Image 1 (cartoon, rainbow, N blue to C red):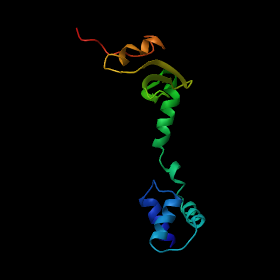
Image 2: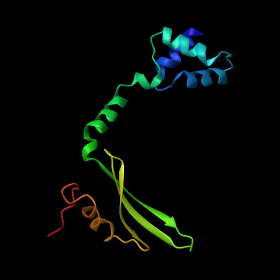
Image 3: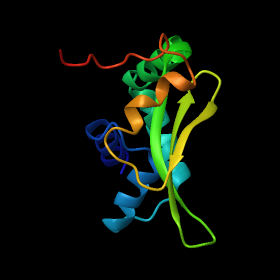
Image 4: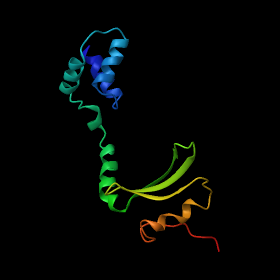
Length: 132
């Protein structure tokens, strides 16, 4: 049984002990999740999230560049008068501050690009160059 647990853990590095336990149960083996965790740890296979150092790279990137990152989205709200309003917002990743850039009943292609400079200033947002 130990060999099977270690083989499943090493062949499927993204699986944690719970996933390996479910697979073993599906195959008809009866053992506890704690046993699977103990066998994996004894074999030197650490828990799944720590097996991939690449995941930490994204977190490190976000922490390093959070001061300059902005996220934007468009959402709609249905009012009590059965009217749909669309809102455009920007989120400053570092401070998690939300800026509502505008609300309209009828969004079109010209509406969103004219909005970002109103909250964060033109220097904070890279604007697309206009065709000449």
